[in-house]
Image 1 (cartoon, rainbow, N blue to C red):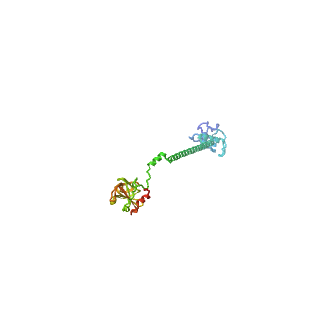
Image 2: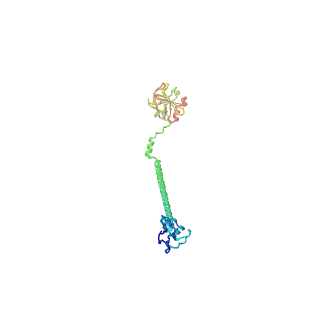
Image 3: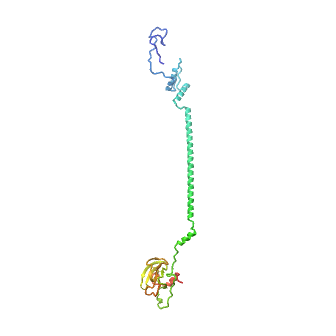
Length: 302
């Protein structure tokens, strides 16, 4: 606190009342007034902090005549602790209790987050198991449907359908047929030249269809002098069948199945004495063989 004095008179606080009016006696030197205001106790405490200097400033400002002893900075002062706590609360800084509350709040939030994560993981696992079970059920249903369809497909056809299929299928071709069905080989006449014949004769009305005896390819077809119109059929083993004295030729080439029509009965050629078929059998395409025995070997004569 600044001190003042009166320049003239005896009303100064530091003048002696009974002293003579001597302006120069017992006067304190004049002090210069500063413009800085005197700081309050609270402001000083806030500025200096909880130190020994705060205690010194508070003691200097107290209206007591005796100056208190200055405390050491490391000694505990209840008043200073209270002032520091008040200042701390005023500044909004958290204290020990606030820190404990914050720690408890953080721990509670962490536990809640962990519980929420655990529940979410359990929900996702349950959803995954449900989806897997549904997919397995669908696969089982599809396999059952496929098995049923396969069993239905493998069931044998109904009797009516089987008969229909049998009728539609081509009949099995016989190994050999008669060249003139319904007609038989002529009995040789007792003539001197009968021994010169090289085949068999089968008489039949003119233009009766002549059929291939067995399967083979047509190797020759056309006019052949004394044989008239002739068709030669070569069998797979090389044997040649000669169909002679034909009135006309139907097959001039290609493969012939047993029973295929190759021409018609006629009387062409110099040796024909009437409508008939002259048949010769020539193994390997060579000299003629016994045609009657060959026919009997194929079950075509009685």
